[in-house]
Length: 400
Image (cartoon, rainbow, N blue to C red; front, side, top):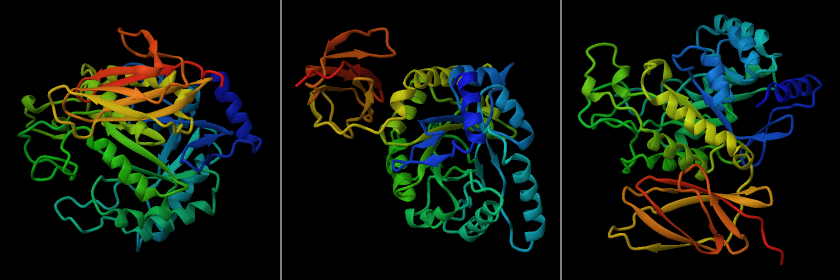
């Protein structure tokens, strides 16, 4: 967003015309403008990190109240973690939270509040709840006595039953989960990893599990709430405080980062946040890879914010010598007079496919690739590498 757009939005909010709202598909609108939100839990460990984040195309950063002025200066938005009101410490916690809320609630750069992170997760003690839902619901109601303008955000660990996670829904408007599937084989025991060395607990051990967890959180959130994904911007081994094994330092590649982001889009999430940059050295490739994805998302911003189209699209697969497991996942979004087709290969093998049912469009132009060329949309055939991403802008619809 340009500085001029930010000032206009902030001014509208002050006039009462900029209510933050969640639409029926979970997309968050601000001043009546729908937006797919891209954010960071931490800034990169580089010089002028605020400017770098804004220039790349990120919208949102987790901050303390004292940093909201800096958020505004860079045309960004922020969210603030409040914690919760604990049993036996009600007066102390209520006073602390009241002070934060009164300090920040009128700031036009504030988008939402967060209470506690991963309230259901207790390491090595599955079935226990770290914080019961009633504690977070009470906290929200206490804050709403001071501020009913801003949303509430709650991030869950990827595990636990959907029914358990759903019991927290009254505490939040935005439901998220953090899934970080790029983990080296043979890593030693580490907080938040199961004994088999994985963070998630679905049968799918590949990065395409991201889409399955997105679906899970949409079922948890139900109608009327936004769903965000918290994705990986770190190497698990770097979370170890001492005795790190350099052979186990494994970052997501650019291709993996790109796949996980676009698969989240295909599965209908309303925003993506990245966690772990404070543990990632400046010389690691992670930040440049995130910049690449954010830049693409900035170009696709109008399409990402739209409701999906529901064409009679059929996929015709061609034999590549491999079985077909999950195949191609896709979403079609309005794009001016045409549409944008975002497709990902959720298989660990190459897949070749022809998209049938795009006859209403004349041409297809592929984006973000050196092989970009226009072709007939009526017979769009493409080969996808394992966990590959391909995106096309489809030409204007023909007249009937």
